[in-house]
Amino acid sequence: MVISDSKIVDAINNLSQVEMARLWRFAEAGNIYFNSTLPYYDIFMKRFIELGGMTPKISKLIGWKENG
Image 1 (cartoon, one colour):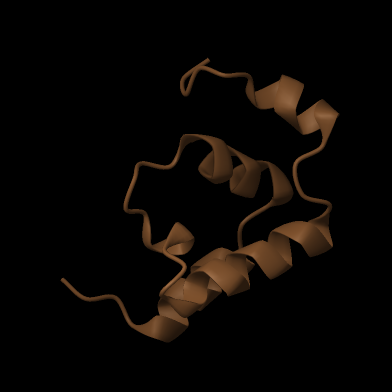
Image 2 (image 1 turned 135 degrees about the vertical axis):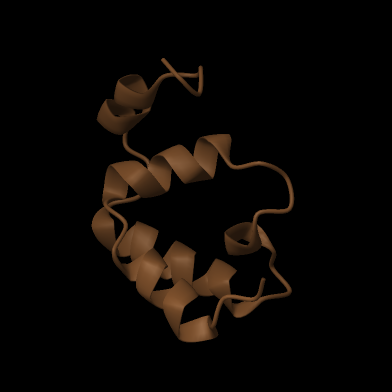
């Protein structure tokens, strides 16, 4: 199944800072948001940085275990 570019960009633009931090830390290898050969990486990183990126507070909130 192929998701349209605009839907992927919309999904990125609707993520909160905490949701983006969780993805940044826990996304599986191969996640299209982090493939630097695709435009989504730049879109994701620009938005994540604009929202404040990974802060110590968010890092502590999400921890190091994906489900805890």
